[in-house]
Amino acid sequence: MDSKEELRKRFLVLRRDIVDRETKNKTILEKLLKLDEFCSAKKIFCYAGIGGEVDTKGIFEYCIANKIEIYLPVILEDGIMCGQMVETVEDIKYYNPTTHIADDSNRFLAYDVIISPLVAVDTIKTRLGRGGGYYDKFLAAAPRQLISIGLAYDEQVSIKPIPAEFHDRPLDIIITPTKVIK
Image (cartoon, rainbow, N blue to C red; front, top):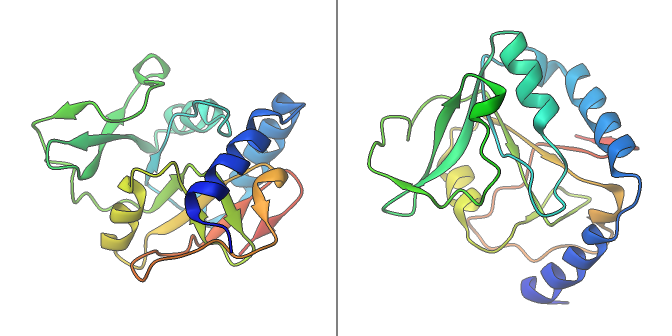
């Protein structure tokens, strides 16, 4: 079995070379907006897509227009991830969320849905991230009722299992342009 680092390198190349992203991003957004789990959410935690990740700008636009609270990830000084509320599209920050802030008032905010970035995912919804462990820690500490959704291009879905550690929590739902895996 390949190591996480070997898989990460391989899938980053695959993700970089994906074609017709705009159409695929639109299809993924349409599928997300039809999910009951998403439609019933009042507080959503969502990444801002960078580096070839599935684009999430439409999610922010939808939530802002429909007065649904949406939060961007921010990493606190102790390495724990929390959310920063986004009220306008201009508030979206497209950067790696390692900007350290002192305010941890949102650290334990009760989100309904987390939309997680990923480098790859397997068919049993084991997520492979960028390697920082921020989302792994966040998901491991999150209450079970939090719905975790991974957005991926079909090329990012591995038919082979992704190595998992004992603390890794599989995602609840994966959305690709061609399928929804629950």
